[in-house]
Every structure is written in structure tokens, then in C-alpha cells.
Amino acid sequence: MYLYAQQQLPFQPGLGELGDGEIDQAIRAAKRQMQIHYDRQRKYAAGAGTTNDGTAARKEIAKYWEWSSELGFLERLKAVYETQAGVPLNYRNYPVTKADPATGAAGKDSPWRRSGKRQVFSEGEANGSFCLGTSRAMAFRTLFGPDKPSNRTILSDLKKKIQAAKAAGDTETEAKLIISRIVSHLHDPGSVKQFNQDLAERYGIKNTIVRSASRAEAFAALKQGAPIIVDLEGGWHWVLVLRSPRGQLWANDPLTGFGGIRKIAASELGARYELIVDAKSAAPITLSQATLYQK
Image 1 (cartoon, rainbow, N blue to C red):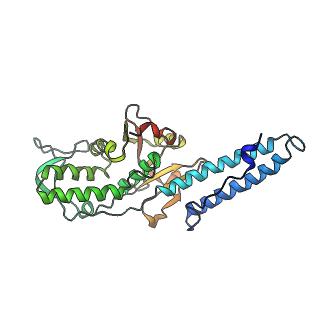
Image 2: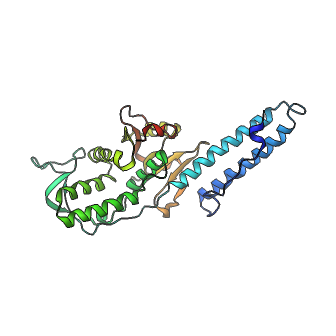
Image 3: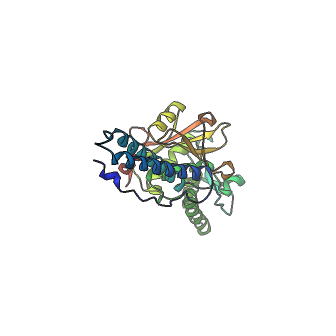
């Protein structure tokens, strides 16, 4: 009855053996708990049918797998972590605008488009260090695999192509690529719609979009095991947040000065939320469903 647990599963050193951050401590604690419950299961299983009816052993192996799930969650959390780091362009005047060419109007729902006149953008835009873009990339890699491109990889590829297009005088291609770069880190509806147009090519996925969500929707998604992207209280900084199998909220914060991967309280979360969802149903995509969306 207990043959599947009689031989100890090998513990790999994994990602948590080095370092002493909060995530490393949690990984080591999960491994210790797995060992404790495995040893107890072996002890109780040895007496099953003689000194006990096997109930205690079944409870211990259930705890073992509970902590195994927690460990897998924590190691994946660490595997997708990315520090927010800029990939700067070597110029700041871009041939793109949100203004409608006929009316000159621009708003949160307006799409970015090519402009005949170059505009000088902020130094921050040129430097390319974006918390929302980084947090989104970590969310996609959480769902669809750590081998999917990081935000830095995406921005590095765009930089190479943008600067080559500008040098060649190909303004149309330059504008298209600049727009792809800009919408990667903007939350307004017009930009999010354009960001979604790049997802299939960028991540090799299908039928997937990002959408804004209410706080209630975001917390319901967390309970289902889906990642959320959320600003912190104050509204100026975005992080990736997930709920562990044991119910703890964890933030993948791309600013290492804020602790990197850390436990987080619901009270720290702000007012803006994003979810990765099915393009037709708008329902959050969970890790168990992710293979359905791979191209």
C-alpha cells in the first residue's frame, strides 16, 4: 500500500541551497518539512496492520506532497525572477504619437501610431528600465515556462532592430518597433490593446491577452493559482504576485532594493491590477491550463 513512499525521493540541491534571502529560507524550510513528513510516514507505514491502521502514514504522505507542491512553487518563483534593468536606446526622438492625425486628440484609449514628425521622449523612456514590463514578463514566464524570453531579452532584441531601422532610414519599421517597446510597459487601454497584438510572436502562445482587473477579480485569480500584476500602495511601482499552495502571498519585485522575492501582505497592494487571461472568455489562465495556450 505504501510502496510509492518506501524509497526516499532524491532531494536536488536546487535553487535554494545558496543565499539567505527570504525565498532561499522558504525553500530550505520546505525541504526540511518534506524530510520530516517522509520520515514520519516511513515510521508509521512500518507498523501498518500491526500497531496502527495506516491512517497516520496516509496523513504524513499527504503532508509530504503538500510541502512538495510548496517547494515546486517556490523554486519556480525564483527561476522566473528578473531584476529590473534598463536596455537604453541611443536616442530619444521617436517617430510615434498618440495624437489622431485628423483631430490632434489623444487619450487613454488612443492607439500609438507612426508620426511624420519626431517627438522628444523622456530620458526614462530612452533608458528602458520599466517595472511593469519586467513584472509582465515574469508573469508570462511563470505561466508558460522560464525558457520564455525575459523582459531584458525582449528589450535587447528590440533595441538592436530599432537602431538598425533608424540607421537605415526605415522610419516605418522603426516606428512599429518603437511602439512595441513603449506598449510593453504602459497600462492605459490603448497601449494594452497594442501590447496584446505582439504576444503570440513574443512568447509563442495563442488565445491569450492581458487585461485590467478589479481587486476582487485579482484576488479570485490568486486563489485559483493564477499570477497577477499589481501596483504597490501609492501606485508608482508594479510587481508580480502569486499565492502559494499553502496560502502565502509572494511578490516578485523587480527592484532588488525592495527585497526581490518576498512575502507580501494584501494591504500592500494598490489599486491597479492586470491578469493574463483567455482571449475569448477573459478568464484567468492558471498554471495547470498553460499548455493549452502554447503554439
